[in-house]
Length: 249
Image 1 (cartoon, rainbow, N blue to C red):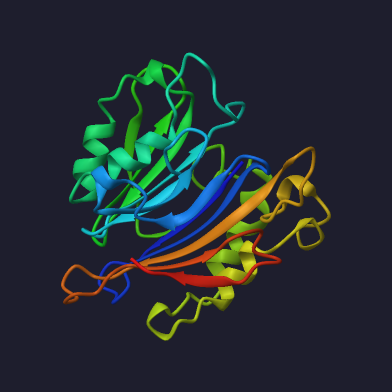
Image 2: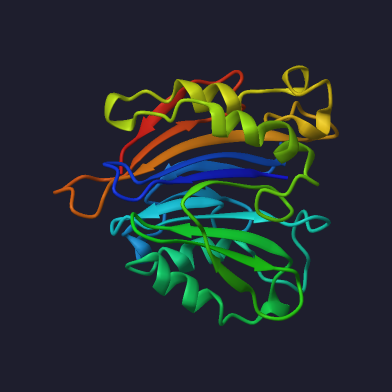
């Protein structure tokens, strides 16, 4: 189960802040965020080397997209397409509304269940796909939204139940001052910091070859900010043991 946290605060200099931990099989190869697709030169995203898609990315228009598996849907299936391609499809669009509308028309039977979040500086959407019909997209409200393998801000998720209030109470990062300390510390919380419950840990220690493999902190600038690119700080390993370093976009 991955985690994605998004804070929407319209009118702010940095109206969208995103924090994400990627949880995956440790031996599944990947590359750190970059411009890995010559036919999609506008996209900066992490690359999954097994299926060729991505779990999280941004484009030059300031659109950010991230995908998470839903409960009981970990890993690939031979007769299904890779969900990672949907992140790249979202980044083909100039704004979040266009991306969400286009992805809502996909053949739902072709993909395993997922939660996909797509945002720009003015709008954000959650696409929920339960594995049956086409996904349904919901506008995300202002404030904090947290996603794992269940519903938005769902207390049935041990991780959300344990950490949502901490994200809500934490001082918001200050991207312009390169200050992400509050959220970086929350992404690094392991089982010991989560009531001793491994299911509630933000940062999963490897168990059975599965664990947290990297982490991201992203800020989207307001649309009117001249020549200001999104900011992305990336931990190339579990965030409790690896520092966040800035990715050039």
